[in-house]
Amino acid sequence: MTDPNFSERPVEARRLWRQNSIYLLPNSFTIAALFSAFYAITASMHDRFEQAAIAVFVSMLLDGMDGRVARWTNSQSAFGEQLDSLADMVSFGVAPALIVYNWQLAQFGKLGYGVAFVYCACAALRLALFNTLIGKVDKKWFIGIPSPTAAALVAGLVWLDRSMDGLGNIGIVALLITLFAGLSMVAQIRFWSFKEINVRRKIPFFGMIILVLALMLLAIEPALVLFGFFLSYSLSGYVYYGWQKWRAGQTKR
Image (cartoon, rainbow, N blue to C red; front, side):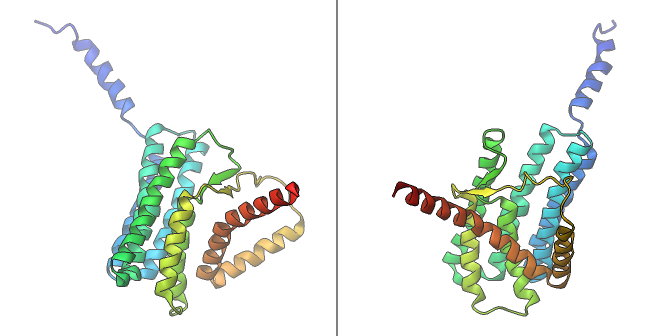
């Protein structure tokens, strides 16, 4: 006897196949960022800390590209958003924590272990908070530093130390920077998001000269320039918060 639903099965199968399909191009960048983070973790296990730190920055670059590629190709999806969030947790939460622990924090015993975990936990909290605040806050500001910035602080310190053949008291510095980066991710302080910058707008010719000089410095001392930039950005929110408090106090007088 012929199954009356036989003719509907191919249509249903095609519908399910389309529902379970994903966009290849943007998700490929996300997977590449995840692989780079995985490589960073494994490299730190073999004491290749400079390579591990650079791999974290490669993850940052790839993570910044996947969303733009998705918008350019009109291939945004809920699957891509979830995959990106999970990859970010590995790239900017787990990887930096394990790298800095293997590099310096292990010598502090339970204290180093705890600081590394605080960083990792704060990264998870930061990503969860970011996902819940999408569309609810002014795009001009981030609440707390973004997780890639925190990862750049930790990985940048590792890279800077290796490129300078060792910095003084680096163990204590690594402990403090890791704790600062972790807590800054969940600090209820506003940081400028740079989303108001319009790359299509004309700039003075002098601005191009500044850009050339910045690129030259980046090429000469990439570790120092990157760490200095992200440290300055991480402090900017606190400076702005303090300035607002000072101005409010002046107004009341």
